Image (cartoon, rainbow, N blue to C red; front, top):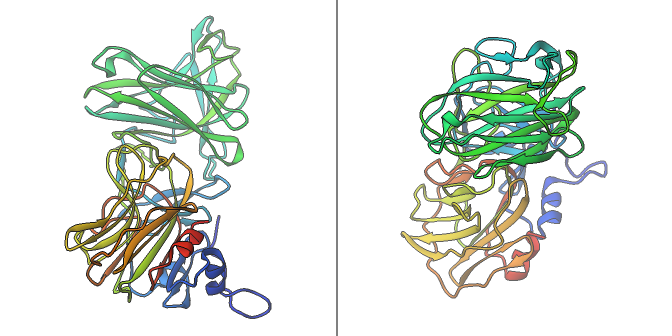
Length: 433
Protein backbone atom coordinates (compact mmCIF):
# COMPACT_ATOMS: atom_id res chain seq x y z
CA UNK A 1 0.00 0.00 0.00
CA UNK A 2 1.18 3.53 -0.76
CA UNK A 3 2.33 5.53 2.26
CA UNK A 4 3.23 9.15 2.83
CA UNK A 5 6.84 10.14 2.35
CA UNK A 6 8.92 11.27 5.28
CA UNK A 7 9.35 14.98 5.74
CA UNK A 8 12.61 16.34 4.30
CA UNK A 9 14.61 19.34 5.42
CA UNK A 10 17.84 21.05 4.45
CA UNK A 11 20.13 18.48 5.93
CA UNK A 12 22.15 15.61 4.57
CA UNK A 13 21.75 16.89 1.03
CA UNK A 14 17.95 16.63 1.00
CA UNK A 15 15.81 19.50 -0.26
CA UNK A 16 13.28 21.38 1.82
CA UNK A 17 9.67 21.36 0.68
CA UNK A 18 9.92 25.10 0.01
CA UNK A 19 12.84 24.60 -2.34
CA UNK A 20 11.03 21.73 -4.08
CA UNK A 21 7.91 23.85 -4.55
CA UNK A 22 9.92 26.86 -5.75
CA UNK A 23 11.81 24.73 -8.27
CA UNK A 24 8.57 23.31 -9.58
CA UNK A 25 6.59 26.56 -9.77
CA UNK A 26 9.36 29.06 -10.45
CA UNK A 27 8.29 31.29 -7.54
CA UNK A 28 8.17 30.56 -3.82
CA UNK A 29 4.54 29.98 -2.73
CA UNK A 30 3.02 31.05 0.56
CA UNK A 31 0.99 27.82 0.87
CA UNK A 32 1.64 24.61 -1.06
CA UNK A 33 0.17 21.12 -0.98
CA UNK A 34 1.72 18.12 -2.72
CA UNK A 35 -0.99 15.47 -2.42
CA UNK A 36 1.08 12.90 -4.34
CA UNK A 37 3.59 12.94 -1.49
CA UNK A 38 1.17 13.91 1.32
CA UNK A 39 3.15 17.00 2.31
CA UNK A 40 2.14 20.58 3.00
CA UNK A 41 3.73 24.00 3.30
CA UNK A 42 1.74 26.65 5.18
CA UNK A 43 2.89 30.26 5.52
CA UNK A 44 6.25 29.10 4.22
CA UNK A 45 6.65 26.41 6.91
CA UNK A 46 6.79 22.67 6.22
CA UNK A 47 3.98 21.32 8.42
CA UNK A 48 4.42 17.69 7.34
CA UNK A 49 1.35 15.73 6.26
CA UNK A 50 -1.44 17.53 4.39
CA UNK A 51 -3.85 16.95 7.28
CA UNK A 52 -1.45 18.90 9.54
CA UNK A 53 -2.32 22.08 7.63
CA UNK A 54 -3.69 24.56 10.20
CA UNK A 55 -7.51 24.59 10.21
CA UNK A 56 -7.71 21.64 7.81
CA UNK A 57 -11.14 20.00 7.57
CA UNK A 58 -12.23 16.87 5.71
CA UNK A 59 -15.37 14.77 5.62
CA UNK A 60 -16.71 11.74 3.72
CA UNK A 61 -19.26 9.72 5.65
CA UNK A 62 -18.33 6.43 3.97
CA UNK A 63 -15.41 4.33 2.83
CA UNK A 64 -13.93 4.89 -0.62
CA UNK A 65 -11.43 3.52 -3.13
CA UNK A 66 -8.66 5.33 -5.01
CA UNK A 67 -5.89 4.24 -7.37
CA UNK A 68 -2.15 4.50 -7.04
CA UNK A 69 -0.09 5.68 -10.00
CA UNK A 70 0.68 2.02 -10.72
CA UNK A 71 -3.04 1.21 -10.95
CA UNK A 72 -3.51 -0.58 -7.62
CA UNK A 73 -6.82 0.06 -5.84
CA UNK A 74 -6.58 1.18 -2.20
CA UNK A 75 -9.55 1.12 0.18
CA UNK A 76 -9.84 4.09 2.58
CA UNK A 77 -11.85 4.11 5.78
CA UNK A 78 -14.74 6.38 6.68
CA UNK A 79 -13.62 10.00 6.82
CA UNK A 80 -10.08 9.26 5.59
CA UNK A 81 -8.85 11.45 2.68
CA UNK A 82 -7.95 9.38 -0.36
CA UNK A 83 -4.29 10.36 -0.80
CA UNK A 84 -2.10 8.17 -3.02
CA UNK A 85 0.92 8.92 -5.17
CA UNK A 86 -1.60 9.64 -7.94
CA UNK A 87 -3.03 12.55 -5.93
CA UNK A 88 -6.06 13.34 -3.77
CA UNK A 89 -9.23 11.76 -5.17
CA UNK A 90 -12.20 14.12 -4.69
CA UNK A 91 -15.63 13.00 -5.91
CA UNK A 92 -19.29 13.77 -5.56
CA UNK A 93 -21.55 11.23 -3.85
CA UNK A 94 -22.59 8.20 -5.92
CA UNK A 95 -24.61 4.99 -5.45
CA UNK A 96 -23.93 1.51 -6.81
CA UNK A 97 -27.33 0.05 -7.75
CA UNK A 98 -25.99 -3.46 -8.34
CA UNK A 99 -25.91 -5.97 -5.45
CA UNK A 100 -23.11 -8.33 -4.37
CA UNK A 101 -20.69 -6.31 -6.47
CA UNK A 102 -17.67 -8.52 -5.79
CA UNK A 103 -19.28 -11.81 -4.75
CA UNK A 104 -20.46 -12.99 -8.14
CA UNK A 105 -21.09 -16.56 -7.01
CA UNK A 106 -23.86 -15.25 -4.75
CA UNK A 107 -27.53 -14.50 -5.53
CA UNK A 108 -28.95 -12.40 -7.12
CA UNK A 109 -26.27 -13.23 -9.74
CA UNK A 110 -27.43 -15.82 -12.30
CA UNK A 111 -24.98 -17.60 -14.63
CA UNK A 112 -26.15 -18.50 -18.15
CA UNK A 113 -24.37 -21.36 -19.96
CA UNK A 114 -21.55 -20.74 -17.50
CA UNK A 115 -20.44 -21.17 -13.89
CA UNK A 116 -18.63 -19.01 -11.36
CA UNK A 117 -15.67 -19.99 -9.16
CA UNK A 118 -15.52 -17.75 -6.10
CA UNK A 119 -12.31 -16.10 -4.86
CA UNK A 120 -10.26 -17.51 -7.74
CA UNK A 121 -7.55 -14.83 -7.89
CA UNK A 122 -6.36 -11.56 -6.38
CA UNK A 123 -8.63 -8.58 -7.09
CA UNK A 124 -7.42 -5.09 -8.12
CA UNK A 125 -7.19 -4.16 -4.43
CA UNK A 126 -4.98 -7.17 -3.66
CA UNK A 127 -7.63 -9.14 -1.75
CA UNK A 128 -8.39 -12.72 -2.78
CA UNK A 129 -11.94 -11.84 -3.81
CA UNK A 130 -12.04 -11.91 -7.62
CA UNK A 131 -14.24 -14.62 -9.17
CA UNK A 132 -13.81 -16.61 -12.38
CA UNK A 133 -16.56 -16.86 -14.99
CA UNK A 134 -16.20 -20.20 -16.84
CA UNK A 135 -18.11 -21.18 -19.99
CA UNK A 136 -19.94 -24.51 -20.26
CA UNK A 137 -19.96 -26.78 -23.32
CA UNK A 138 -23.24 -25.63 -24.84
CA UNK A 139 -22.90 -25.40 -28.62
CA UNK A 140 -23.40 -22.14 -30.55
CA UNK A 141 -24.47 -20.23 -27.47
CA UNK A 142 -23.74 -17.10 -25.48
CA UNK A 143 -22.01 -17.56 -22.11
CA UNK A 144 -22.53 -14.80 -19.56
CA UNK A 145 -23.28 -13.78 -15.99
CA UNK A 146 -26.26 -11.56 -15.21
CA UNK A 147 -28.12 -9.72 -12.52
CA UNK A 148 -31.56 -8.12 -12.57
CA UNK A 149 -30.97 -4.48 -11.58
CA UNK A 150 -33.64 -1.94 -10.68
CA UNK A 151 -32.73 0.90 -13.03
CA UNK A 152 -33.85 4.50 -12.60
CA UNK A 153 -35.28 6.80 -15.28
CA UNK A 154 -31.97 8.51 -16.01
CA UNK A 155 -28.71 8.05 -17.83
CA UNK A 156 -26.85 4.99 -16.60
CA UNK A 157 -23.20 3.97 -16.43
CA UNK A 158 -22.19 0.32 -16.21
CA UNK A 159 -18.72 -0.90 -15.30
CA UNK A 160 -16.81 -3.98 -14.19
CA UNK A 161 -13.21 -4.99 -13.55
CA UNK A 162 -12.06 -7.84 -15.80
CA UNK A 163 -8.85 -9.84 -16.24
CA UNK A 164 -7.99 -12.28 -19.00
CA UNK A 165 -7.49 -15.99 -18.33
CA UNK A 166 -8.10 -18.50 -21.13
CA UNK A 167 -10.53 -16.00 -22.63
CA UNK A 168 -9.25 -12.48 -23.31
CA UNK A 169 -12.41 -10.63 -24.31
CA UNK A 170 -15.55 -9.62 -22.45
CA UNK A 171 -18.77 -7.65 -22.93
CA UNK A 172 -21.34 -5.55 -21.10
CA UNK A 173 -24.91 -5.89 -22.38
CA UNK A 174 -28.02 -3.85 -21.45
CA UNK A 175 -31.26 -5.32 -22.91
CA UNK A 176 -33.98 -3.73 -25.03
CA UNK A 177 -36.38 -3.58 -22.08
CA UNK A 178 -34.21 -0.87 -20.47
CA UNK A 179 -34.82 1.70 -23.20
CA UNK A 180 -37.78 3.60 -24.60
CA UNK A 181 -36.59 2.88 -28.15
CA UNK A 182 -36.48 -0.89 -27.43
CA UNK A 183 -32.89 -1.08 -28.70
CA UNK A 184 -30.24 -2.91 -26.70
CA UNK A 185 -26.83 -1.36 -25.93
CA UNK A 186 -23.60 -3.31 -25.64
CA UNK A 187 -19.83 -2.87 -25.72
CA UNK A 188 -17.12 -5.44 -26.42
CA UNK A 189 -13.67 -5.23 -24.82
CA UNK A 190 -10.25 -6.81 -25.38
CA UNK A 191 -8.26 -7.47 -22.20
CA UNK A 192 -4.71 -7.42 -23.58
CA UNK A 193 -2.05 -4.73 -23.94
CA UNK A 194 -3.41 -1.30 -23.08
CA UNK A 195 -6.96 -2.65 -23.44
CA UNK A 196 -9.25 -1.99 -26.39
CA UNK A 197 -12.91 -1.19 -26.95
CA UNK A 198 -13.66 -3.55 -29.86
CA UNK A 199 -17.09 -2.12 -30.59
CA UNK A 200 -19.98 -0.23 -29.05
CA UNK A 201 -23.56 0.19 -30.25
CA UNK A 202 -24.87 3.49 -31.57
CA UNK A 203 -25.96 6.14 -29.06
CA UNK A 204 -23.72 4.61 -26.40
CA UNK A 205 -20.08 5.18 -25.50
CA UNK A 206 -17.49 2.89 -23.96
CA UNK A 207 -13.99 3.09 -22.52
CA UNK A 208 -11.42 0.81 -20.92
CA UNK A 209 -8.80 1.60 -18.27
CA UNK A 210 -5.73 -0.56 -17.61
CA UNK A 211 -4.79 -1.20 -13.97
CA UNK A 212 -2.06 -3.19 -12.26
CA UNK A 213 -1.83 -6.97 -12.37
CA UNK A 214 -3.47 -7.42 -15.76
CA UNK A 215 -6.78 -5.91 -14.64
CA UNK A 216 -8.94 -3.56 -16.71
CA UNK A 217 -12.00 -1.51 -15.90
CA UNK A 218 -14.58 -1.82 -18.68
CA UNK A 219 -17.13 1.01 -18.85
CA UNK A 220 -20.35 1.45 -20.85
CA UNK A 221 -22.35 4.69 -20.88
CA UNK A 222 -25.87 4.52 -22.31
CA UNK A 223 -28.78 6.93 -22.97
CA UNK A 224 -31.51 7.49 -20.43
CA UNK A 225 -33.01 4.23 -19.24
CA UNK A 226 -36.52 3.41 -18.16
CA UNK A 227 -37.41 2.82 -14.52
CA UNK A 228 -37.48 -0.95 -14.93
CA UNK A 229 -35.81 -4.10 -13.68
CA UNK A 230 -33.43 -5.26 -16.40
CA UNK A 231 -30.96 -8.13 -16.82
CA UNK A 232 -27.48 -6.64 -16.99
CA UNK A 233 -25.09 -9.14 -18.57
CA UNK A 234 -21.31 -9.51 -18.42
CA UNK A 235 -20.19 -12.06 -21.00
CA UNK A 236 -17.41 -14.05 -22.60
CA UNK A 237 -16.28 -13.58 -26.22
CA UNK A 238 -14.16 -15.50 -28.70
CA UNK A 239 -12.62 -13.39 -31.49
CA UNK A 240 -15.18 -10.69 -30.81
CA UNK A 241 -18.10 -13.09 -31.05
CA UNK A 242 -20.44 -13.65 -28.08
CA UNK A 243 -21.92 -16.80 -29.67
CA UNK A 244 -19.65 -19.84 -29.75
CA UNK A 245 -19.27 -23.42 -28.48
CA UNK A 246 -17.62 -23.50 -25.08
CA UNK A 247 -15.09 -26.08 -23.89
CA UNK A 248 -16.21 -26.22 -20.26
CA UNK A 249 -12.93 -24.96 -18.79
CA UNK A 250 -12.09 -21.56 -20.29
CA UNK A 251 -13.05 -18.22 -18.81
CA UNK A 252 -11.87 -14.94 -17.33
CA UNK A 253 -11.86 -13.13 -13.99
CA UNK A 254 -14.44 -10.53 -12.90
CA UNK A 255 -14.74 -8.22 -9.88
CA UNK A 256 -16.32 -4.96 -8.81
CA UNK A 257 -19.46 -4.68 -10.95
CA UNK A 258 -21.16 -1.29 -10.75
CA UNK A 259 -24.26 0.50 -12.07
CA UNK A 260 -24.62 4.25 -11.51
CA UNK A 261 -27.42 6.70 -12.26
CA UNK A 262 -25.00 9.20 -13.76
CA UNK A 263 -23.49 10.21 -17.09
CA UNK A 264 -20.00 9.11 -16.04
CA UNK A 265 -18.41 6.38 -13.96
CA UNK A 266 -16.86 7.00 -10.56
CA UNK A 267 -14.57 5.06 -8.25
CA UNK A 268 -15.64 1.60 -7.16
CA UNK A 269 -18.34 1.23 -4.47
CA UNK A 270 -18.67 -2.14 -2.71
CA UNK A 271 -22.16 -3.59 -2.21
CA UNK A 272 -23.50 -6.68 -0.49
CA UNK A 273 -27.23 -7.36 0.01
CA UNK A 274 -28.31 -3.75 -0.56
CA UNK A 275 -27.21 -0.83 -2.70
CA UNK A 276 -24.45 1.35 -1.26
CA UNK A 277 -23.55 5.03 -1.48
CA UNK A 278 -20.13 6.60 -1.35
CA UNK A 279 -20.62 10.06 0.15
CA UNK A 280 -19.04 13.22 -1.25
CA UNK A 281 -15.48 14.26 -0.37
CA UNK A 282 -15.36 17.73 1.20
CA UNK A 283 -11.92 19.21 2.01
CA UNK A 284 -11.27 22.79 3.10
CA UNK A 285 -8.98 25.06 5.07
CA UNK A 286 -10.46 27.92 7.11
CA UNK A 287 -8.69 31.15 8.12
CA UNK A 288 -6.12 30.72 5.33
CA UNK A 289 -4.06 33.85 6.18
CA UNK A 290 -4.14 35.24 2.64
CA UNK A 291 -5.44 38.35 0.93
CA UNK A 292 -5.29 40.05 -2.43
CA UNK A 293 -3.25 40.47 -4.57
CA UNK A 294 -3.09 36.70 -4.96
CA UNK A 295 -2.35 33.88 -7.38
CA UNK A 296 -3.73 30.36 -7.10
CA UNK A 297 -2.36 27.22 -8.76
CA UNK A 298 -3.75 23.71 -9.20
CA UNK A 299 -2.52 20.61 -10.98
CA UNK A 300 -5.25 18.05 -11.48
CA UNK A 301 -6.53 15.08 -13.46
CA UNK A 302 -10.26 14.53 -13.92
CA UNK A 303 -11.23 10.88 -14.28
CA UNK A 304 -14.27 11.88 -16.36
CA UNK A 305 -14.95 13.53 -19.71
CA UNK A 306 -17.87 15.87 -20.35
CA UNK A 307 -20.03 16.39 -17.26
CA UNK A 308 -23.40 18.15 -16.82
CA UNK A 309 -22.25 20.53 -14.06
CA UNK A 310 -19.16 22.64 -13.36
CA UNK A 311 -16.38 20.95 -11.42
CA UNK A 312 -13.77 22.78 -9.36
CA UNK A 313 -10.10 21.99 -8.81
CA UNK A 314 -9.29 24.81 -6.35
CA UNK A 315 -11.01 27.89 -4.95
CA UNK A 316 -10.30 30.65 -2.42
CA UNK A 317 -13.32 32.62 -1.20
CA UNK A 318 -15.07 34.45 1.61
CA UNK A 319 -17.31 31.41 1.99
CA UNK A 320 -19.68 32.55 -0.76
CA UNK A 321 -19.75 32.45 -4.56
CA UNK A 322 -19.82 36.27 -4.59
CA UNK A 323 -16.15 36.78 -3.69
CA UNK A 324 -13.77 34.16 -5.02
CA UNK A 325 -10.91 33.16 -7.25
CA UNK A 326 -11.36 29.67 -8.69
CA UNK A 327 -10.02 27.18 -11.23
CA UNK A 328 -13.05 25.49 -12.80
CA UNK A 329 -13.86 23.00 -15.56
CA UNK A 330 -17.07 24.04 -17.30
CA UNK A 331 -20.15 21.86 -17.62
CA UNK A 332 -20.71 20.07 -20.94
CA UNK A 333 -17.88 21.77 -22.87
CA UNK A 334 -15.08 20.73 -20.45
CA UNK A 335 -13.29 24.02 -21.17
CA UNK A 336 -11.16 25.44 -18.39
CA UNK A 337 -12.68 28.44 -16.66
CA UNK A 338 -10.48 30.54 -14.37
CA UNK A 339 -12.72 33.06 -12.66
CA UNK A 340 -12.43 36.07 -10.35
CA UNK A 341 -15.66 37.37 -8.78
CA UNK A 342 -15.94 40.47 -6.58
CA UNK A 343 -19.19 41.45 -4.83
CA UNK A 344 -21.08 39.12 -7.14
CA UNK A 345 -19.64 40.66 -10.33
CA UNK A 346 -17.34 38.60 -12.56
CA UNK A 347 -14.09 40.50 -13.07
CA UNK A 348 -12.43 37.81 -15.18
CA UNK A 349 -13.84 34.54 -16.51
CA UNK A 350 -12.72 33.24 -19.91
CA UNK A 351 -13.53 29.81 -21.34
CA UNK A 352 -10.23 28.29 -22.42
CA UNK A 353 -9.86 25.69 -25.16
CA UNK A 354 -9.09 22.91 -25.83
CA UNK A 355 -11.59 20.92 -23.80
CA UNK A 356 -10.12 18.87 -20.99
CA UNK A 357 -10.26 15.15 -21.76
CA UNK A 358 -10.61 12.40 -19.16
CA UNK A 359 -7.46 11.20 -17.40
CA UNK A 360 -5.33 14.08 -18.70
CA UNK A 361 -3.27 16.03 -16.16
CA UNK A 362 -3.35 19.82 -16.51
CA UNK A 363 -1.77 22.76 -14.68
CA UNK A 364 -3.69 26.00 -14.15
CA UNK A 365 -2.77 29.29 -12.46
CA UNK A 366 -4.96 32.37 -11.98
CA UNK A 367 -4.01 35.76 -10.56
CA UNK A 368 -6.07 38.62 -9.20
CA UNK A 369 -4.72 42.06 -8.32
CA UNK A 370 -6.13 45.56 -8.52
CA UNK A 371 -4.21 46.25 -11.73
CA UNK A 372 -5.33 43.12 -13.65
CA UNK A 373 -6.37 39.47 -13.68
CA UNK A 374 -5.03 36.73 -15.92
CA UNK A 375 -4.39 32.99 -16.11
CA UNK A 376 -2.17 30.38 -17.69
CA UNK A 377 -2.87 26.79 -18.60
CA UNK A 378 -0.08 24.32 -19.36
CA UNK A 379 2.33 27.15 -20.30
CA UNK A 380 -0.25 28.94 -22.50
CA UNK A 381 -0.94 32.46 -21.27
CA UNK A 382 -4.35 34.12 -21.60
CA UNK A 383 -4.91 37.86 -22.24
CA UNK A 384 -4.79 40.05 -19.15
CA UNK A 385 -7.63 42.34 -18.14
CA UNK A 386 -7.26 45.96 -17.15
CA UNK A 387 -7.91 47.14 -13.61
CA UNK A 388 -10.37 45.04 -11.59
CA UNK A 389 -12.11 45.10 -8.24
CA UNK A 390 -10.56 42.39 -6.11
CA UNK A 391 -12.76 40.03 -4.06
CA UNK A 392 -13.30 40.47 -0.33
CA UNK A 393 -10.73 39.04 2.04
CA UNK A 394 -10.85 35.21 1.86
CA UNK A 395 -11.87 33.04 4.75
CA UNK A 396 -11.86 29.58 3.13
CA UNK A 397 -9.85 27.42 0.75
CA UNK A 398 -11.77 24.71 -1.11
CA UNK A 399 -9.79 21.67 -2.27
CA UNK A 400 -11.56 20.24 -5.31
CA UNK A 401 -14.85 21.90 -4.27
CA UNK A 402 -16.56 25.27 -4.60
CA UNK A 403 -17.33 27.65 -1.76
CA UNK A 404 -20.58 25.77 -1.06
CA UNK A 405 -18.78 22.44 -0.58
CA UNK A 406 -20.13 21.05 -3.87
CA UNK A 407 -18.86 20.99 -7.46
CA UNK A 408 -16.46 18.18 -6.62
CA UNK A 409 -13.55 17.77 -9.05
CA UNK A 410 -14.39 14.13 -9.78
CA UNK A 411 -10.72 13.40 -10.20
CA UNK A 412 -7.28 13.65 -8.64
CA UNK A 413 -5.85 16.90 -7.29
CA UNK A 414 -2.08 16.45 -7.49
CA UNK A 415 -0.83 19.80 -6.19
CA UNK A 416 -2.18 23.20 -5.19
CA UNK A 417 -0.56 26.46 -4.17
CA UNK A 418 -1.28 30.06 -3.20
CA UNK A 419 1.10 32.96 -3.82
CA UNK A 420 0.62 36.15 -1.79
CA UNK A 421 1.27 38.21 -4.89
CA UNK A 422 -0.22 38.70 -8.34
CA UNK A 423 2.35 36.86 -10.43
CA UNK A 424 3.49 38.72 -13.54
CA UNK A 425 2.54 37.13 -16.85
CA UNK A 426 5.91 35.45 -17.33
CA UNK A 427 5.87 33.97 -13.83
CA UNK A 428 2.23 32.92 -14.24
CA UNK A 429 3.12 31.10 -17.44
CA UNK A 430 6.24 29.54 -15.87
CA UNK A 431 4.25 28.09 -12.97
CA UNK A 432 2.22 25.94 -15.39
CA UNK A 433 5.15 24.74 -17.50
